[in-house]
Length: 578
Image (cartoon, rainbow, N blue to C red):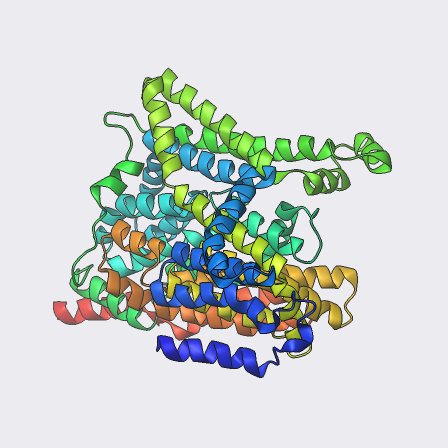
């Protein structure tokens, strides 16, 4: 199968006309400029290891670069390692990149502090008390997942253990619990305005725009613009709520729910367990009185601090008539748009996360939850959980710089700009991202590999179609949304995804059963995403029309394709009583 995939990839590229015509634009390498991303994608399929795949992809490009500079093969092979280290160091030295890494690490530390103070668990337990029926239990699990928007790992590890006894009592299958957890982890974290994801997402967006000569764009503003185009994230959240409200299921999930309702057997197979290390990471300190304000206050400090920071930081970059207008109407929509649009998001969110961490530490010490040394240890431990994100970031930045130097995006654009209709490009990007993420089990790696190719391609195909500047901007934004949401869709289906595994553990559900019951739902929502989302917006239909229709289609699919689990269980009970 892997061999077939590789052959198909190479065959498709050959059929699209890659040749020597673009050699001058691509540093005289022709189709060889595609080697780094092809190597990274192919190895990701084969090894399932995104770090190794990115590293070897960069190394292959560094070798090519050495050959083009007149070095011999041996020197190019040896020099490849030097080139990689130089690129990684250069990536770390960039102030924007440093801010992104610090932002991710600091939010990880903040999440650990909130968890150790029992804040997230207090909120979860407060909501859980309202779960009185199968419908309310599922809807509250959904709401709880939305509340823990700031981190997908925290979501998976907190919601499951809190809700499991309640859903068991209501005869809700562990498969359904795992599905709700998984579907409110990455989908909400990926579109939240502030989360452990946003730093990475705005980073790959900024790097992608640099490949089309737009180095000064506000990546955070672009990220916000992509949210309406993140169809899979939005529709999956709607889908989960709809199944809970209507109490209707289909496919393998319907069988699991009927089994749980009629027999009381909430799980099948062997239950996946959370490891002691993972449980300790999010467990409140022993003896701590749970208080929802231990979560609400630090999170509100993070959110409010970020918004105030965006305004003040962005205002510092304004000048002339724009600054005068903002001073005259400081709270107008124009003022907010201009200040937020010019703010340095990497710096602002890092500052807000650091300030929120300090507030959390002060709260914990004042309430005698932990000592200062314990607070620092907890904060550092939380940062460690996101070190892997920093490694992927550095490699993704290095690959982007290499692709730019080799002229890969220039070659790809020249080869494909006239071959792909602009109406289907977002759908193609979404599907490709899904396949890569499914095979690798990682959203982050998929975004890092695909974004540097998607943005130049969207710019060329959209521009070549004669679009106006504003429409072209929207076309690029929807293509970016396709990369980001396609990565989450593929990750959601993948049995080797970390969030899929953690969701099984949090619900104590057999992992294979979780994957089998979830994948049908994910594929249905993925199909709606393409047919009622990316295809219509690709054809130029307004997002304000497409998004409500796609939401409606999702709700109607659950209502009319699903079978009522409650009706079946009631009939079963009546038969047994008779």
